[in-house]
Length: 241
Image (cartoon, rainbow, N blue to C red; front, side, top):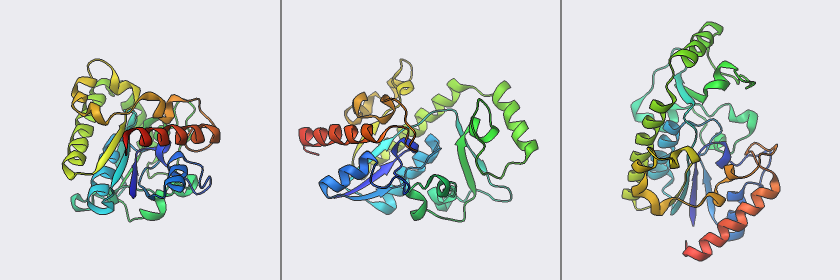
């Protein structure tokens, strides 16, 4: 069975810790042909592009769809312009060479956009500044925008609409999929937009962010990844997936 993995760092297997991510453990146990397009720092917009890429290029039998936080954004690389026909290939997966996300090796491109958590772009709240094309002046302007003009609730609304459209496209494609929904998307006022997809949304204990953080790039201990693999295997046995 061909399986695709969509999402951010929680969902992204790495070459540095090869074989330790729960999706890799499951692939080994169940004989899957695994295709990871998840990438650390992904925004929900990038995840939406991952969905299109998976539908049109990977064409799997099944997909894991992880969601992410609203405080993330995409910015154009200096001198570049987003190319509508390139979809996911617009986005720089280059920094994953540092984290060794496996998706980098399949999606190395000549990108027009980069993306990350806002705090990582500006180095705020103890977050490191990863390689990007921002000048110090641009970073300061972005910081001031974030402090004075960023509306988290409005960004959540936009992300919900973006995710909605991706889930609809997956359903229409006929690809079987599950949704790992971040906690803030389950709150009153947000979940009403996603309730239609309730049958695809898995329980919290199957979501890696439910567990304590660890030192590996996917934010949990190796033991937790084995636990997640066990729980997911039970899920597939129970549902016949």
